[in-house]
Length: 219
Image (cartoon, rainbow, N blue to C red):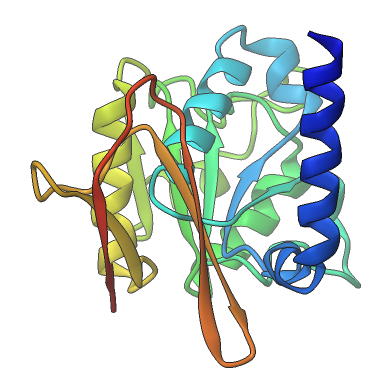
């Protein structure tokens, strides 16, 4: 139905113009959770991309602004791409450069939290040429008290709940949307918050096929 589609696009454009300041506020929010996005682990692991999507979904269902960080950004001595993040997720990252691993270790030793998903015996095992990575850096990251590990087999809901607990420990889930029927954090719903004119804006997107009755708790 092309006329309906055109009408919907026009309506969306009108709302974007009407709410341009609010939309910009969401865009300007700085993410505190990053996911490593790199060609190297994708080349060596067929599960990398699917696990990345699983991690992104689990974080979105926890109301997090999420950034994607590359190896070049991590290794940039001027921009220091990890500085803004409190959490870095490594989804099935079996291969990455030695420099990237060393910089992740330095960032973690300064308080950063690493979330790994995969088999421990495969994670952070080799570089971009499939040569073994330094055992000292690998062991330091994987065995750190600031590392939270999930197995490859982790289900979407288990990952969402596990990350929810981590975010609560770090004081990062200040706004939580609950299912009014179960009084549990709502599932299959993405939410984002942003500050605008001294107030908190909340954006909700229901990805399920059913309507949801929800309520919100702040702090």
